[in-house]
Amino acid sequence: MKNFSYIICLIVGIIVCVGCKEDAGLIGLGVQPDEEFLNTDYFDTTTIVAYSALHDSLVTSNVSTNMLGYIHDPVFGKTQACIYTQFRLSAFSVNFGSNAEVDSLVLTLAYAGYYGDTLNSFRLGVYELTGNLLKSERYYTKSAINHNGIFLTEQPNLYITPTPTVKQDSSSSLYLRVRLDKDFAKNKFISKSGLGEYTNDAAFVEYFKGLYLEAEAPTGNGCMLSFNMTHSLSQLTLYYHNEQAEGLKYTFNLNDSTAHFGSVNHFDYNEAESNLRDQLNRNYTSAREVLYGQAGAGIKVALNFPHLKETFKDRKVVIHRALLVVSHKDDNLLNYSPPSSLFMTYTNPAFGDAFLPDYYLGVENNYFGGSYNKTTKEYRFNITQYIQNLVDGVGDNYQLNLLVNPSATHLSRLMIYGTHPASANDFDKRLHLKINYTIIDK
Image (tube, rainbow, N blue to C red; front, side):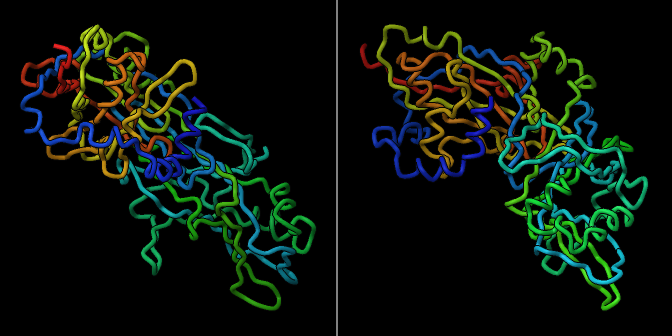
């Protein structure tokens, strides 16, 4: 799965590269309007085997956004997201002056989004790291670094209720401010004024390895916040005075050069609803009716088409369009709105997960699809080239994976109809594949 995580980190580069290298023989596949398929054969009864499965750990280092929060979802159970981050010097050879005293030490994080009920609070713990956090290392949602047990917030029991405590500056950028313990600021930073710990960044991060931000149990259902760790407002600021001046400050930077990552814990979905737990335990009875997905390296929908290759055995066929239709099922929209988009990969046992060939044919013009349609309550994927390869014998019947997008930096959940909804009225909402094709060797 690490190969796939690396692909995700390079997604922007991939899009740029393939934009000028599309195969001219493939352009136009599946883009005709519906009326142009009137003289083609059509069916939407392809057998689909689909079920919910655990997602592997994802890379959360070297990305701008990390999650922080604790949420107790009535369907998916508990999810906790925490942040590990180091800081760098804004100027070298720091000297705070004669008899410097701390006024305050403030951690500021630029707000990048939220999920869940922001009127519910969660307890925030801030601790000093004791293990090294390295910029060159790749960290995942299941990674962890040692920290001490000393609580560093100025307020002993600090509960974060995002809506009222979020601050706003003149540029309209939202941010969260957390005051840290003054004694910690004095002993850790002021006491080293003019000494070797401030010589350069290497010396400083060896001395102060960084902070661990832990979201602890909420008072209710809780919420999940996302923060832009490389925003100019994200920083650790020491406010102080000395014998010469008042109102001084020094900033410890959070930027593209600092190492940081987010960890995510789903607690093995022990408190999820029974249908979801059954599917994760490989009892797929409920998968016919409902399927689940969750970001944060949580849950994916795995599916394949076991009989499609046999359907066209020994026949030459042109697939004009193949659309996978995914219908949203969840009605709890107040705090758990559907993901704005999904993405899809396939799993090749030889080398892991990769994007479908259709992905490369038009990400920018939405040829591949995956965006949520609020009117139809659907996600649609154009997988024409993948299906053509399958029936031609070019590719095997690989497992396809439906994943919530983005998967590592924001939390959201997915509930969709399975292949056989319980109510006959929901037949059109089933997970199905629409295929327009022509047999050319009749």
